[in-house]
Length: 449
Image (tube, rainbow, N blue to C red; front, side):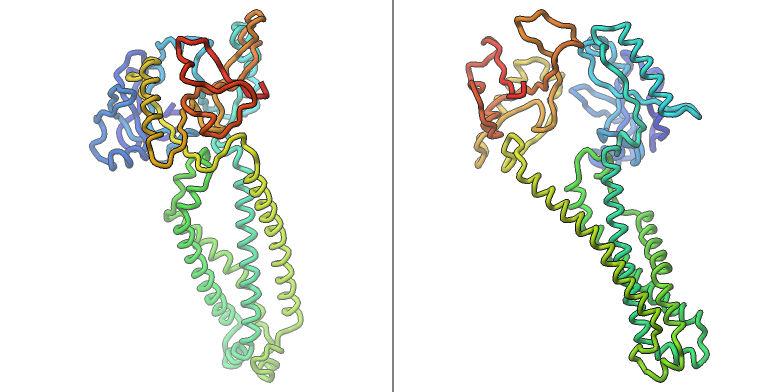
């Protein structure tokens, strides 16, 4: 795995062949984030023990900060070491895993997809009960990480570029107007021997100072609002929480300021340096020495600003309209004043249903006792997160093959689940205290099912 990723650990090492076998010593590799958060970057982290699921593991390495994954993993442990577990050996209840592969030179993604389809077809033929209709999906890593957000990020970057163009056009117009107002000043410079190059250089320096100050203020503002933007970001965008400001970002900001200075400060400077000296000295600072072509150019800049602003205004209006519709969209439950917490019980301690039920009842009692809490419930997944896919069939029909079963989204709940989410009951009843492990098994279905 680590060889495919191509990132060596910043300290320590990754798994050896002896540690990647069934029954091997329990060792782990941790992330830079966990090293910082839990161990304060302790230089003696190697060899220390951490507890996972009530089992002790020895830390053998720390990955660099740029190591990432779709799930923002903090701990890596050997899958092969645990593969003698019955769940991993079963073809019907095997947990989902991702397979990572590095393509050979000159092998395309399409060729890989074709090959994987052939493998899936052979598996379907060999194991028809479990692999009927199953196939393999091959996705480049970058698409897996940001694929569904790539278009949105591109649109966002385009909007930022338009705002930058509008600001630059506005500044170019202001500099051109300012240059026209200073025509007498530049005429005097020219009269005493200043060259056009010197006048252009003077104006470009002024433009650069303004651009640099604007870039610095923008950079400071971005640093100030960074935490708020990250908090509003979707939680499943890989590494979004790691957005930070470093010398590369500062250098890019300086580069953008410099390039915009040259592109949009050169034209006003060139216009000012080509003003008619005699006319400017006669007319004074009224700016009447400005040629008609320069005035027309400034008019076109204003038109360009309006043309660039209009799409942004329309897009912003559409976004606000969509947001307003989403706010009024019926989700099937009431999200206001609803809070959730997600955690995982250590399976070595809570290894049977009785212990889990006891913990759940105690948790619900404590949450209900909190002042201001009206209802409390437990569910296997949060609202709109999706549940466990399970197959089912009508009892009066013979049991079909697994691949022929109807699929449903299963949620396991406890407590006042429907009252807490304010989900109305169409027919029948909700669960009550008489629904125990010894009573007849009951379920609640939705109208779609």
